[in-house]
Amino acid sequence: MTTAPVISRLFIYTAIGAVIAGAAMPHHAAAASFYLQDQSVKGLGRAYSGEVSDQGAESLWWNPAAIARSPNEIYIGENSILTSATVLDHGSSITYPGGARFPTSGDGRAFNPVEFGVVPNGAVSYRLNDRIAFGVSTAAPYDFTSTYASNSFARYNSLKSRLTTIDIAATGAMRVTDWLDLGVAINTEYTSANLGNALPNLSPLLPDGQETLRGDGWNVGYTVGGQAHFGAWEFGASYKSAMDHDLDGTATVSGLLGPLAGNNFSTAAKAHFTTPWIATVGARYHLTPQLTLNIQAERFGWSEFNAINYTIGGANTPTPENYHDTTSGAVGVDYAMNNRLTLRAGVGYDQSPLNPTYRDTRVPDSDRMLYTLGASFKVLPNLTVDASGAYVAFRGSPTNNSTAFYAGTLAQTTVREVSDVGGNAKILSLGMRYNF
Image 1 (cartoon, one colour):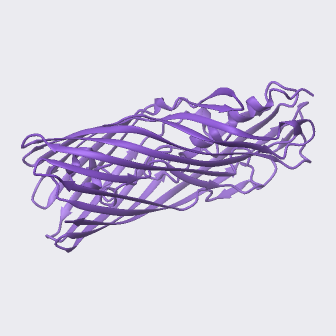
Image 2 (cartoon, helix red, strand yellow; image 1 turned 90 degrees about the vertical axis):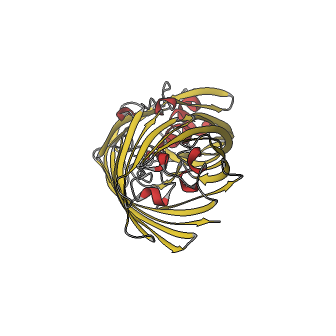
Image 3 (tube, helix red, strand yellow; image 1 turned 180 degrees about the vertical axis):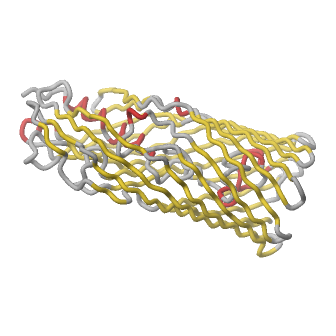
């Protein structure tokens, strides 16, 4: 039996390709695909509707101009993301060489495969003088962990998936005129992945093999932004660049038996992919001294994530992803009850960039609605505590796709996955702002 081309096909559907794309699991409650928008506790309370046009260190992720006229400030926040998801098998099957077709064995249900997550973030800003300020912020814009049991019907798409990023931004901002502020930031991101899925052997009587990938890397991008202030109006706009990511690590295939045994290996691996640019515009209007109205829209350049290019054992192969650009939007309000307590509420909508052809149990991303409440309480003249909560409703996301393992050889084995994924998420956030 000829199996020489196996390795090249194995990794078209590996953790490098499908897993990195698989950050679309519902863990990412507040934004689509594998982008995690939970970078501001105060912002969550109004569904992130006012961040690009607001001021202070907490808004640095959205606009580097946010600190141009704000006081020296330290912000720390923590977001707990509690997902509730059910994945149900609706007739998945596996076809072995020769055409023998069987239902995919194992448990046909998976409850809450996405692990609960805690996402911290923070920022500090410092004024050099009345016109120039500097800041440093940290965020986790792409982050998820999901786990399926080794006997799950979904195991050929996913077993263990972990993707973590840490973004460190160095920011400079300037108050150019009485009404105009400008800012720029250099974003340095560390990315780490630990990914794996099962591989079918050539008989339903044989145990599965497994493939895994571990890798990490550092990359750099930038953000530019501006704010305009006209009486009761505050306007903001920013552009966050697309960022190339390069991961270096190890790919391993193990547990293949019989004619496939010669394809067990462990070798150096590389992966290259690009995360989207993000263009954001928004406005805040102080309708009264107590009531502020917020609106914000974001355009995501997800078409940058058109493929993942990987190198394994010296072979270079692209994995198509074919994401499409999307638009999200939100509206919200801030209401100052008094000089110490401010209440917030907001509603947001986010589109999924995923091509339905590529949706599977690792990638069940769908459009979503975000409903939020929040509050800020000034404990001391220079210390404010923020708290917010959100409910995220996901549109149903069925999967119906086929994957050919060992394609182009006599060992070709096809897994067809038919399932339905449903769920929701709750976000609970707590943060603190200290002026000095």
